[in-house]
Length: 147
Image 1: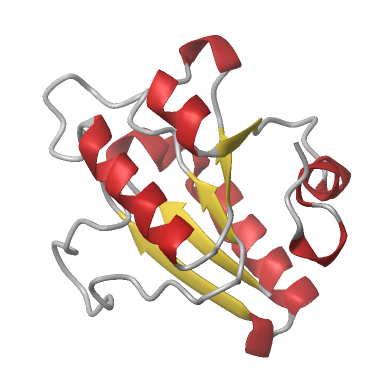
Image 2 (image 1 turned 90 degrees about the vertical axis):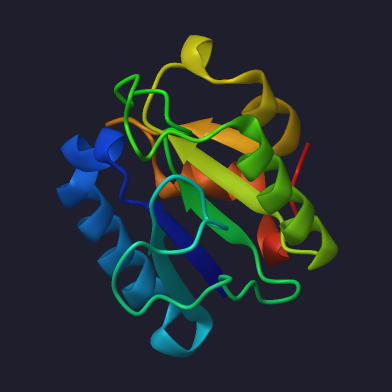
């Protein structure tokens, strides 16, 4: 299975339609019984500002997490969705405790990625050339992370 966490922060608005397509395709491929999806703003462990999202997010033991975010790279300086590295480090620690490896798809060039993302998440650039095969190379068979 797979846990999909989609960043719906202001900086990710240009990718909104892509996120919907990705979510639908993953649900179809993994099957509804092996697929969990959640949207967040800022960082996954922040309480939702609206809606009926579960808080804190349910991280399922031993199930990989696909995190689609820009880690605030594209956020306006005074955006309410901008968070510090501490929020992201807390999420990385929670996922590690649950033995749930995290692969982050980032819609920006690697030179813009924050250091905390590189050192705590398995990061993959997300653009028009990114394929399911690229993810498979990183995740490997049986959801064992490579590298």
